[in-house]
Image (cartoon, rainbow, N blue to C red; front, top):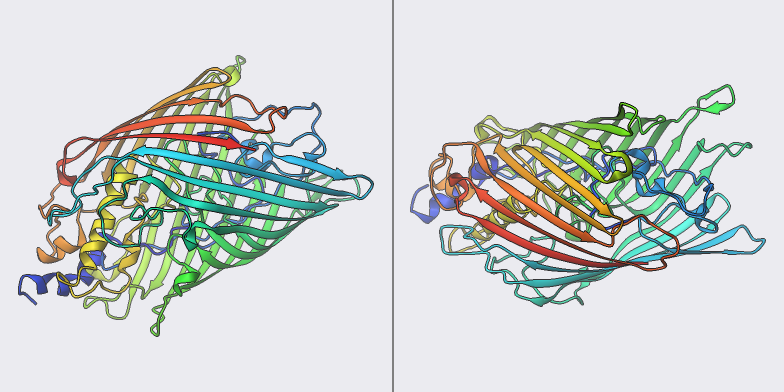
Length: 600
């Protein structure tokens, strides 16, 4: 989850002293669109989400929702036709496999897996995995006015994700690991610092953080005596990745493909939660879920246990999962976070998130309009970043509005999307309030403008603040400035077209236009300019337009899932061409990426 990110203006105040000192002054199948639906399970939010960018106090990010795992329903046919990705039923837990896998939710990424039963024991074993290799040709551009450029040549990185579990009647125990993650060939970037979560500054796959446990947990699902498909009790406990709520702007477990761009890592927490569907009407149990739980955050966009940060959530949600992919719900999260070191610099914030989705049939020909929206509000107080303008901390008040709509043609051969959103931004940092809202790092918008350009500028800013020859050291909380290009302080419109003329071929293309909802300002140079909005090239800015971008993609091997495939290979090739505004340096930035996967 993206919790407490820093806004450029707020960090600018915090670094004013060090900056002036320099000049002598005082976050299935390949490339499927993100499912705009709540995790098939009833959802709860967990902290890291407010899912999904310099005094440093950016709006907190919500805890990730805990959703209710669906109860397996034995398939009528030996193969299950997948539902369009942007519907509730398309969630990974929404597709069910033939026996003996019918007792298990589908693999987290929608891929195949192997299951087998122990006769007459009620026990089922499951294994699944995904081997992924990504080759990328990156754009190069300056990230500051000191002569630093991204400087990254073509690279090849990899990841192996393995899952295993055992189920016994209503109980399942499972584990999942990411192994050998990192860049194996090519050229690392030239930006100094180790704050980039993807570690594009180094090579190798044998580092300590190249091996990450994602899940070691149990699930208990109880149904009534009639075995109706709506469970009346669901309990979970242990280490687990974040589950989705709504469109995933607050939390992301790193297990769903984005429509464009890559998805990495994901939020993880130790979680305990219980969900119930207590209301029965006649012979039917209503699909209205009430969930409560608690989290200890292991890793999300704003806290890492290994770095000494401590973050905790109390979560509660109400979710209606009606027929025809209709959903509506609200979740609440209370987050408490303390920073590493002797001075804890606490953050206490509340998050309220409202989500709704539905499908509108368009005549009798099979066309359908899918609509979904997620709106979130964060309020509280933080001391993560302290400065002369607000030595006792800052108030937090930020919000986001995100909406997705798409029209499906009969048979899924064509789909037209329109996506858009708005996130709040800090205006005057001297008011002691933080209004920046940051989406989760894995909630991708576009391919180049945010992920590459803004991500590189953020890492370059951190390198400047951390250069003791320039500043004497970064201000407290400045590490939260680096977000991998998460969407924040922005509004955008993003139409996309998809076509699947053959079962094994999908093509897609999109156009993105984005605007800043606050001044375009890099904190180091803005502080040196006395608060006048100044960009990463040390030039004053006046507008709000960030730029526009074109994307394209061709995917091979993305046809319907069939259980005859024990291993499913795929290849996805995509590219983007961005045209940043003059306030962000102008010019053209091109990226090409090829992702080869084997799901098994």
